[in-house]
Length: 165
Image 1 (tube, rainbow, N blue to C red):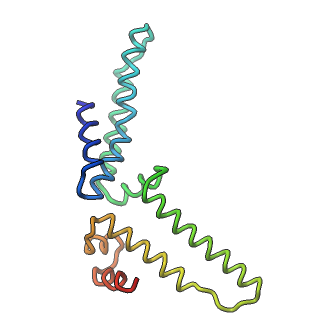
Image 2: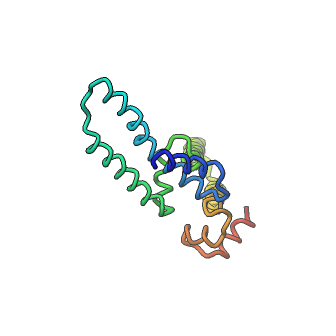
Image 3: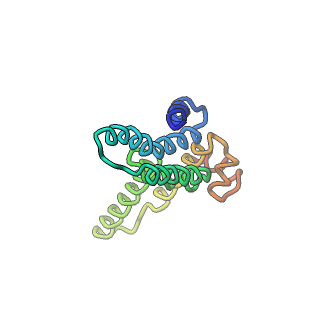
């Protein structure tokens, strides 16, 4: 059953039409991998005579998988899980935004050192806002209403911001 679950999650992570379902399947695939790995290691270890109490270890892995399964049902939790994965799109987006903020702070320090009065805060703010709105729309499979709900703004604000950028 675990191998069938693995196969179904692998298929869903590749062929899902909805981006959110594909991301959820990838997280669940990562969560079930330790259970499968341990299962394949357990049989050879027991064959060579190593005594392992699988009745204790398997439920721990299954409980871990179930906790991740429950957590992925909420978008906010899914986002925080994906932030921890090294090559996820969410992590790349946060790194881009962080990089832009760092660039802004460096430019601000340079401007202060040169005695300039003009600091481009509006351009930085609009750039970051644009990336966040684009991410929210992508996470909700193109639904502006759901993206607005996710960001805590009205759907007309999403439309306005998309037109602006």
